[in-house]
Length: 205
Length: 329
Image (cartoon, rainbow over all chains, first blue to last red; front, side, top):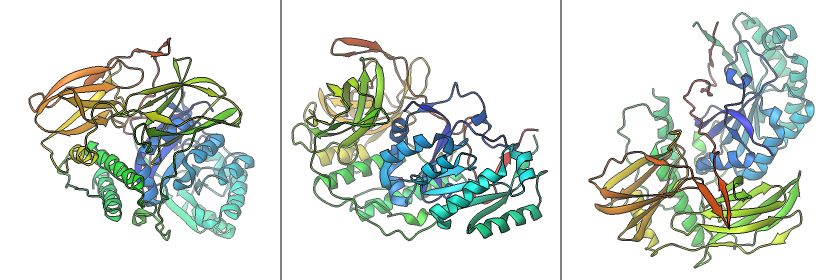
């Protein structure tokens, strides 16, 4: 597999990306165009970004092997959209084996086949579902809410609610507390039990 | 609260737990540094490497090394029972050529040529035509490595502080093949292992902490995983490997030493160091060089840049509770 671009690698994240000590590996590239994108670098030119093959990344993050094994942690793949690189995830899992838990921070804005492949190698998912109202979702992300929600429904059935955290943000100028209530209610109907509800804090520049 | 300090505290607790569970003597000193903390530092990293070596040594002696699940208290969820890793398997021959998606998986083991014990944390590099790095790997606790490359003819190189660099040709095919384990020969006089590790970690005879950064001469970027072999009176005394930030750390007694700094793609550099007169050391700058493999010479002009997580445009921390988003209007 050819080396793929990453916008960053961040070690020693504790309690941020799931269980234990984790290293975040953030891919370049995303299908969405969120107005308040946190990692805008994933949308810019990848020319000057570091690139790694699964083997090279495995060697690089392996420096924290002891921490991963001792705490039940591992590598969280974010981005960007990590499920756009599902072949990379599969090859990486074959390298790291069962000792490291893999987590994917995803919008689920990918074909179902990618979600299915990812589900076989990723232990825990952090799903940024954003909104249940398709118009609001479209306005904020430019994407199709139905695809994300269909994939989430499948993922909950496949992995079980204990392995899926769903983020529900209050997005200034796009939704309201009542909108978030509706989104949470819809998630509960799907069987989601781990919901992370929070507010985007917009910083005036 | 300094997030880095909090992380440092948590990681320190993990190291302490591992050491206690495996009867590994580990002296953890309180950090007195008041500046910005990244959560780790050369001293913290050296403790991790020390634990890895000590655990590997337990396995070599047929003891159980318990790591998995020891520090689940850090985790968001718990309930996984601690389990022990298996004792190391006997060295086996590399298994060449399990083809998948056009790639052939190559696995093998690196052992000490004298006693045939597996060598952990050995850098393994696979070269094509003597000039292109096709893949890299590092041996695990059991001395085992694994990488995937397309079928073809390669050169295999293994590097480890305290051992002669090993090179051989490697034919990777789509059919399985047997090959003898890589046997590395120790350099110089082999000192008592326990004594060496104790001195390295500052547990017994620490007199002066020697720390330095190794960088690329042209770009000034730090060079990780560079081997530093320390000789005294012409004999190998100890060694170290630079970390992600290009930093290595040693504990040396007063005296005169010769540092031999080497890594693939750069010219070997030797410097004389008087401890403590020459401390602190200036940054060591390595020049890129040509590398020779069995008559084929290639120029190295590529390496993987390090990522600075604090630099603009890199990933920032996201809080699970109360995410902060920076927005440019």
